[in-house]
Length: 433
Image 1 (cartoon, rainbow, N blue to C red):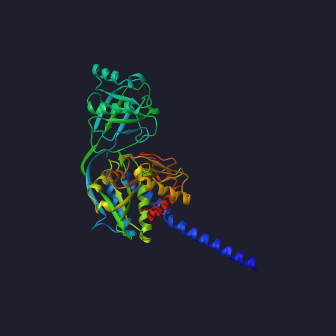
Image 2 (cartoon, rainbow, N blue to C red):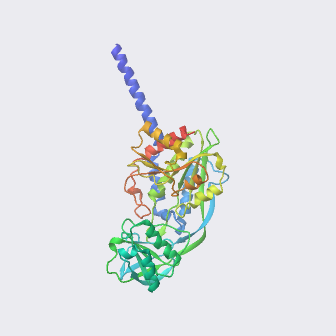
Image 3 (cartoon, rainbow, N blue to C red):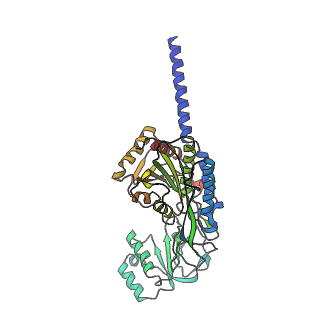
C-alpha cells in the first residue's frame, strides 16, 4: 500500500513538472510561427526592401502600426507615429554596367556605391599593383604626374595591407573628386549594399573580384540616381503600462536598404525584420502579462542611413528620458545557433546588466555562449548610451546570413535561438533593478 501511494505521488509530481514546463515553454515561445510570418511579410517584395523607392519604408510602417493596433498597446498622444525627415540618395531606375561590352548582373556581379550620382560614361582603368597600392607617397606622386581623370581607380582590397590604407583611398577621392573618373572596388567576399544621405561627384562600383577580367580595357556605367531632399518617414512608438511608471525600452529598426535600380531589392529578413518581429512578439506577450516596469516599444526608421531615427528620438523624447531604466536594442536576431552577443556588455558601467543576463542564462541553459563586446556605434542603442541611459544591443550568432545582400531572406534564417532569447528578455525585465 505504501509503495502504491508513493508511486501515485511520484506520478503527480511528474505530471506537475510536465505541466509547468509546458506552461513556461508556451509562455516564452508563444508566437515563433507568427514571428516567421511577420519576417516573411516585412522582407517580401511588397515593401521593396523597406527603403525609399516606392515608399517601401512607410508602407512597412503602416503594417507595423496595424499589428500594434491589433495587439492593443497604447500610443503616446494620438498616434503611434513620430514623424521626421532627412535627405537620401536613391536609384529608382534601371542601371547598366558593362566591362568590355559584357553586361554585369546587378546584385550578383556588382553593387553601385550609395553616393553615386547620375552617370552615363565610359572609362579606362588605373590598376595599381600590390607595391604601388600600399605605397601612399608613391601613389600620390604618380597621380600628380599623370592624367588619370578618364580612368577608374581599381582598388583590389585583397592587395591592400591594412584598413588605414583602404581609408586613405576613400578620403583621397573625397578630397580630390576630379582626380579619377571614379572608383572600382574589387570585393573578395560577399557584396554589400548601403544607403547614404548625400551624393558625391563620382561613381563607385563594387565588383566581385572573381569576375573582373585581368586584361579588362573599358567599363561603361549607366546610372540614374534620384536625390530626395527631406524624405518624410517616422518612428513608431508604443507602450504598455506596468506597475511602475519607469520604463524598460525594447527597440529595433524596421527600415532597410530598399532597391538598387529596377531589378534588385534587399529583403532585410535578418536585418532587421527579425528584430522588428520580435518586438511585435514582445508587445503581444506584455499585452496579456502586465509587466513590473512599463514597457516601451520603439521601432526606428533611418538606422541604415546613420542611426537617424534613434538620434531624432533621443533629441525629441515622448516621455522623460530619466524614466528609462534600460534600453535593449534587438537587431539581427534571426539565428542563435552559436549564442548571442551583447554590445556594451563588456563595459564596466554595465557590469550589472551583463551579470544578470549571464545569471539568467546559466539558470535556464538558454545559450552555450553569451559574448560581451565593448562600445560600438553600430545600432540604435548608441544614441541612448551616449545620453547616459543604460543601453545594450543584442544580436544572435551563427547560421549563414547575408548582410546587406539580396539573399537576406526568410529562408536563410534558422531561428535556433529565438525561444531562448525571448525567455531571456522576459526574465531580464522581471529581475532588473
